[in-house]
Structure formats: structure tokens, C-alpha cells
Length: 216
Image (cartoon, rainbow, N blue to C red):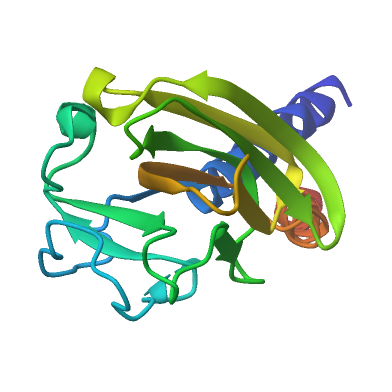
């Protein structure tokens, strides 16, 4: 009886370890740098009036809307903090662009944490809010007041967390005078909650199989 209990305990530990490995394999990081992920050509060097907005998508993961890709922007000292050459940008001198950049996640891509860099493209200081949503519910936000101008390499690092995030919104304080860029966004994915019972069922199945073999 004692030996049988010991074998069962060992199998429980093995099954638990298997489940943890599955969880680790399902979790991961996605870095969007607009050069390698997704793979994009170098964009123009400056905001051009009436340049069409670009929707940038990493298939099955995330989609960016509201701006377009710039490549090695001129007169932008903060570029040294970005992943050269591309960034995703918007500005009020192009009426085709939105004051609010938005990032949405694919329903199959469960994200719990988003971080990255926001650059002020204006020649004056500016303030921004970065918000994370699940559906229409605000789940986290950060306010960056008086980010220094681009001539002073003005930038802010944002970091947002929740059980789940399906949209991130960048909001400048002024909707009539805005110019900013984002880059090097990292998304932390976690397993769907519905997969956890499946992992537990699999572990129990292994345990039951081993117990039946032992009993036979």
C-alpha cells in the first residue's frame, strides 16, 4: 500500500510538471519593431501631407491603425532609442491620419501585458495618455505629462497590464497639434483560460493510465 501511494505521488508530480511545461510553451512574447515583425520596407523620412494611412498587421496577433510607417525620421534625436529604421507615426499636418493610434489584438492572441516607447515628435513639450481596454472596459492606463520635445529626445516608456488586453489606445492631449511615434512594442501572451481545464484533464488522464497499468 505504501509503495503504491509512492508511485501515485510520483505520477502526480510528473503530470503536474507536464502541465506546467505546456503552459510555458503556450505563453510567449511578441516584439513588433516595424522592420522584422512585421517585415516592412523602410518608410519615408517625414510626415507628408495626405500620405495615406497604413494599417499594419502581424497576422493572427496584432493590428495597428491611425498612422503610417516612417523610416529614420529626420531632425529626430530620439531615434537612437528606437529600433532603426522604422517607427509608426501620426501628425496633425496630414489630415488622413488620426490623432489616436490604436493597437488591437486578434481574438486568438490572449495578451496580458503591453509595453513600448512613445516619442514626442513636436518641437514643444506635449502630454499623452496610453489606455488599455478589454472590450469597452478600461483596464489600465498611464499619463505622461509634458514629454520633452523631439529636439531634447523626448520619449516615454509605457507599460500596461491586466488579465487580458485586446486594445491599446494612444491619446495626445491636443487633437489639433499632435505629432508622435511608437516603436518596439512587446506583447506578453498567456494561455486562454479555457485551455487550463484541458491541461488538467490531460494530467489526470496520464495519472489514471499509469494507475491502471500498476493495478494490472
